[in-house]
Length: 425
Image 1 (cartoon, rainbow, N blue to C red):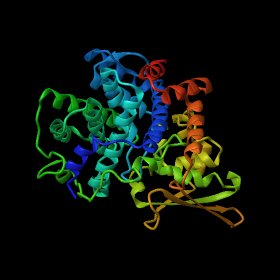
Image 2 (spheres, one colour; image 1 turned 30 degrees about the vertical axis):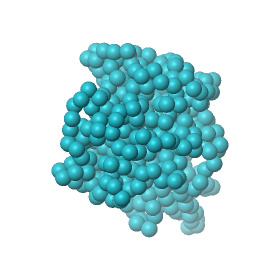
Image 3 (cartoon, rainbow, N blue to C red; image 1 turned 60 degrees about the vertical axis):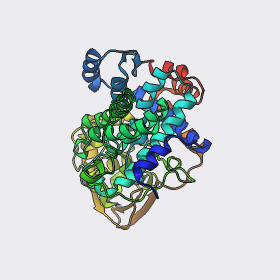
Image 4 (cartoon, rainbow, N blue to C red; image 1 turned 90 degrees about the vertical axis):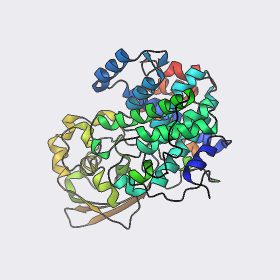
């Protein structure tokens, strides 16, 4: 078996199966809905304004402003991850679309390609980012690197190489250039810098491909070679094959709660709780140990921090606050007396017997009885059911009419149809 770098270079040139692009189309819609809604968040206004003042060009950003291709990728990646509501892949615990799609969108606009070409390039990039994340391994993530930003940057670069039809030699150099720029740490979780990580990955992908296209060279194996990205960033160098007969994108997980994906199995389990909140004396949550350093903020003071808290989101759910509604993650609700009182009855324990997509919940009631619940996010979901749920999510974010228009654009053939939807405020 050839090394990861050789596999990735060859992978940018293969045919993409229809089932993989069908899933990518769903993620395209989901990403766009998250980005349109994220662009309405005012906290990033000053950041966006500053970037637009510094960089000029014709590439569109959410809301309709234009800038350079790398900066469009930076802004669109950041804004589409601002709500932390975009897709995840648990094989490497990363958000693949939010790093890859802003990169290919900027270059698709430049190259004037149709939506199918964009979708195929994005599918290559998402699949590649998952493979790089698996190759880097869990140690890379657990020590503190953010896979969305690190593996995602390599996926964005390879998607860009595919869209630009770069030859193998230039694709190799693009990977090497990416190795000098890919970065991002989990310390940023719960802050504005977490979505910035995604934007930086998207920008890195665009720049690495464009620089390589101009003739800039880099290490022959900046990813896996001696002193390359993997060896110097706690990469394990696990054996990874590309492609699989069943592409990994087909097991992507879309969010239906507006918070960290590590909380979703717990929240799905809580849907089945029958007892009223005033009868609950204790809530015990068991989760995979890896999530304890990701989404276990014990007493969040802000709506943003609440998105990374088992205790907060469990209390919200049990009190009837819809965790699928972006508007419920506010500073006010994070400090609401009723929520805080119930939150204080929540206990979170790591359990290595569970995998990263599973959670177990035990509810103790005033009469001494107990409800026990369990959920696994990898429970198979038919594509039609997933599409229906995503359209409902889009309607909640954008309104039913706008979401259906966006759905049609994301399932269509023309890039202009999609761009027209993204630039509407």
